[in-house]
Image (cartoon, rainbow, N blue to C red; front, side):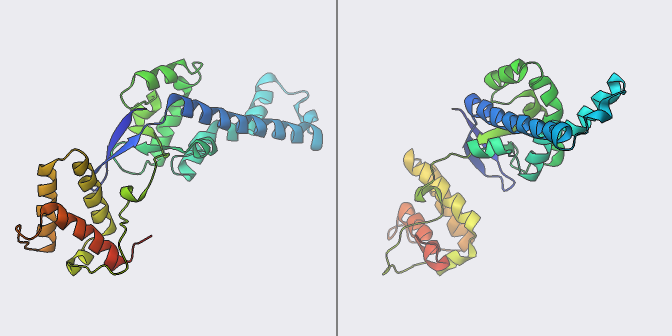
Length: 249
């Protein structure tokens, strides 16, 4: 499973796993079954319950086709409408925990979903070969509609634990050191902790140093390096923020 780095509007890179071909196909099949069920129900109501089949008698072929198109119209706009209403998901995508997102970090708009829907005519009606080939060979597992709209389908099945959030375990008798941390936002702290965690994993001292300097600059703090290392400082900042904002487990 490949990853895609999405640059958010706050100029922060966040890595997501792209949805696999299997997940996308299964989501498509689920949505297809829903649409087939809709057609069966509508036709049953039209011909059996309301007994309106007589309306088709005597009509020319084009008129009959027009009526069928009207009856089944929701099937054609199903992905466009539901992705717009469900912010990048359809029932199938929601069940598989995958979602359409803009790769530039912004929320996909109706125009983006419309472009994906239009290109679906090429991606899907070709027997799915064009769309499947594009997903396999493209950098971010994008079908033609995704490439044209600047979108990608990501997996929401990331394993989330406390290390991936702004939460931090602190003892009841914990004594904070920097009340200035209340000037930070949840998003600030999420960025700090995420970058700090990544830097620790690869022992990137340069990133840790830059992060420490940035925090000190924002909070206007002067720390004696002989009394507290940069790692100790960042750890305390994270714990203090959780202490003052009441974000605990």
